[in-house]
Length: 231
Image 1 (cartoon, rainbow, N blue to C red):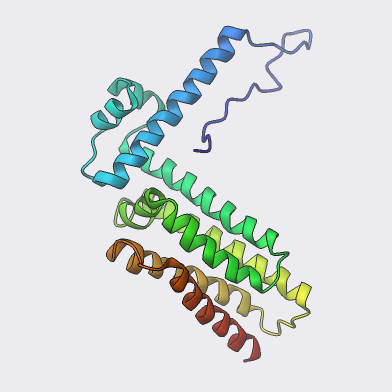
Image 2 (image 1 turned 60 degrees about the vertical axis):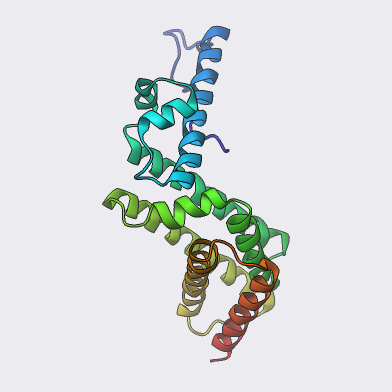
């Protein structure tokens, strides 16, 4: 799990003569221990939310799985909802990084759309069912704050795909007469990803053949992109 807490010694922590303060080894060790405890609690919440469900999981169960006291959980997180939001931030970051890596590996060509689809289906949905369960199932229908976090992630992913498509168009010499096309393509791709995640991975538990599903969805998306570009 990527660390979501960053311990930083600010540059303005100086003595009056301008000399920078250096933390002792014991102080650094305590910071590392806090960081490790934070991530342990978050990891336990992720597994429990995915397995039992958000509403069926208690702070006491998370504390027990983390081998810390209930009070320790509240030192790092305001409440259970805060844990869910932090997990969504992590999952959103991982999804954007996964798709971004595939765009870069493909050299920003039209094949990038094939690669990001395979990565989403095989690596994100198939490889990390706990991410899938939390982001597409457990975070749905929650508070305004949770829904806002979902919106932010979807908006950022859509913007990433839009910007990648604009770059691909430049590389391929595609004339985008209508500026709305990149955004429409990105919105449609994200929408397809979301419905596939629900229909095949959550409602049907798991598709029998992810490779076949990837090929068919890719053909559909690429056909739509090609038609829209010619329109």
